[in-house]
Image 1 (cartoon, rainbow, N blue to C red):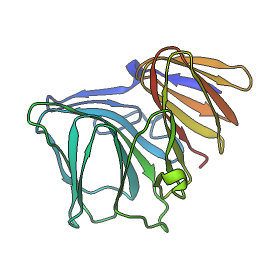
Image 2: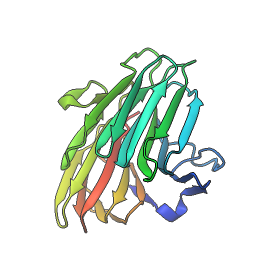
Image 3: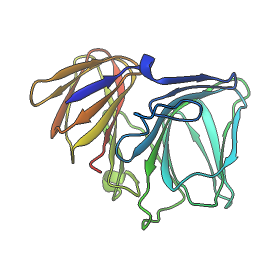
Image 4: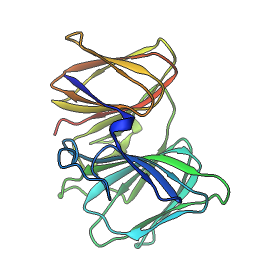
Length: 232
C-alpha cells in the first residue's frame, strides 16, 4: 500500500533566519498521529539564512543524516569534533547523551538548504562520531547497518538510497521489510508496487510504503529523491 503525504500537508515554519518543512511532529508542529514512522523520527527540509546557526544542543541517542542540497555548513560537538560539508555531501552524526552539537551556515550571503533525518539508534551500537560521503547520482546506497558499498554506517537496521533519474527512467528496489518512506526532493515520480498500485508524487511530496516487497519508480521529470527502507 502507498499513502501519499503531500508537501502542503506537512508542518511549516518561518522564523526569518530559518524556513522549514516538517514531515513528522517537530518543534512547535505537533500531530499525535505523526510522531515518526518505524525508526524514522524526523524528516525535515530546512533553509538557514546566511550566517545563521543552530546553537549547541543535546539529542536523544539518534543518528542524524544531513544531505546538503545548497550551500556549506560547519558542524561541531562539545567533544571537539568538527567538519565542514557542502552541496553534494551526506553527513552522518552519531549523537551521544551529554554531548552537544551545533550547525552553522558558513556563507554570509547565501542560504544553506539541507534535508535532515533522525533515526533511532540501537543502544548497544557505537559508531564514529562523524561520517561523510559524496553523493554521486543514479541509485546510490548512502546509509546501511553495515557500511555496505562504501555507505555510511547506521546504528539501526535501515537502508537509505539517494536517487537521481532523468525523465522516463525507471528504478526498482527490493525492500527488506514491511515499511519504507519515499521522499521527492525535486521532480515528479510515479511509485508502483507489484500489485500495480500507482501513486504520483511531485516536488516535496512523500509517501508511506507498507507491506510491499518491491517498489518501482518512474520519473515523470528529472527527479531527485530519497528511499528510506525501514524494516524495524
